[in-house]
Image 1 (cartoon, rainbow, N blue to C red):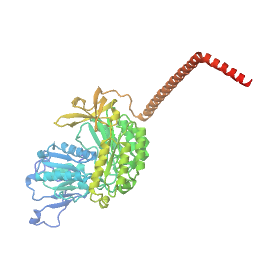
Image 2 (cartoon, rainbow, N blue to C red):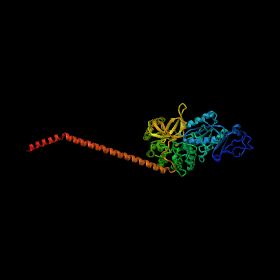
Image 3 (cartoon, helix red, strand yellow):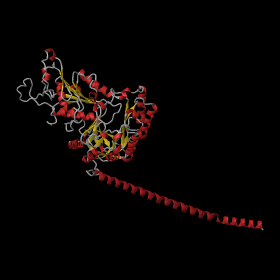
Image 4 (tube, rainbow, N blue to C red):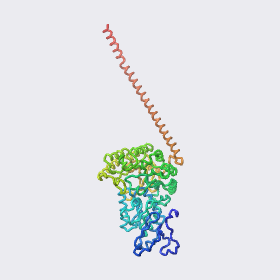
Length: 587
């Protein structure tokens, strides 16, 4: 741990010159001042000074800060952490909380109890940034120390309202202890310089002890015209395969039951370091214990097109949820081109069709932006038709928000009334789908790894099927972290309900290092069994058809014989009379 935190200054221990400091008080980190060329005037010494460090970071020293603040004992204060945004942000917050806890800080769940507030921000949409700024404003009104992190300050260093608060950049989260300590002393810190990715070995406090979120890369290869996150996260930067596998093994030993792979685009993983997402997934599933599930994060269509066969194989793995989030954003090619999404509707449909064909009951989630600049009603109807075609069980529907500094900010806007109307229309279409009805009556394996609060402060268990259908169950703490056999009896809009049949059922499929070979054999065996059943059914149907035909034939023969018996004499008599008449006529 000492090596990981080499940025921190040593503690003062037994230093004779430290008469103004108590032992175990940390020195200002990375702020060794240059010798001034001239002595500052007394009036200047009372003003704040700005220090630039070697990594393009800034620390604003408040010279008027009282001695008590400058000599605080670090590691005893209360810290409240508030997180906005994606699972990547959640993981970053968990890493920062882990470091703070290891240095003795108390993590509290109420901002009123906090001495300092750490806010991790999201810049994807205006509402998320507005909510973030509301928290900052509230903290200021309470005279709390504030540190902000995440994509908002990283994407724009000059956000109004953040001038006097400390900022920690997305690649600087391994220095959160330094920033917290300096801020508590009354100084303003701005660590926004880009550097190597933070280690995956950092201590971590998970929001859910059973779920580990592993960032496999940061940034992306795209240049979407509406995206502000690109300004913050930057170009693609991937963790090594070895680092991710080591993290996976570590968290499994810690008792994690579910692993989420997260990034701005998991499909682009490894392209900057000579590997790819399919190679990572292949090695990961070989490391997974029998009781741990893997969820693959969001991927854009262009970067999985060449890996469809391997991705399908992975999604069929018994330790991987048959779930994939593939944002389409729009169903019209002109709109996609204006977004600079780097794929067509037809390519997106190919991905969906391939996965639906090769991964039984796969759940595909997507994103839709309503009212992108210059989008016409006819173009939006193509998005509606795409949504209806695939009936996505999960859709993140957003109205277009122009983000400062993006190319889309300068494009011709769609009237807000039309944007809202389109959002309402596609939401109504989405909510009309009976997404989970096909599961009713079936028996599913469910992994119970979460809980959520109901109205009235009562908790209920949350599980997911292999297809990642959400399951709600009455709260029973003993079931957390367990898997169950579950009979689906009711399908609602957002989840399914039913009855537990068995706890911790034994798996029918063996998983090991040679999974792929075994999987192929198993699937081949299953296919052969299915073929045998189909052939037997066809033979049985043919036999039944032959029996029916034979029965009909006998019935027809019997009917003919009965007819001859009943009317034969009359026919013969009529024939003889007719012959006699003809003979008399011609004679």
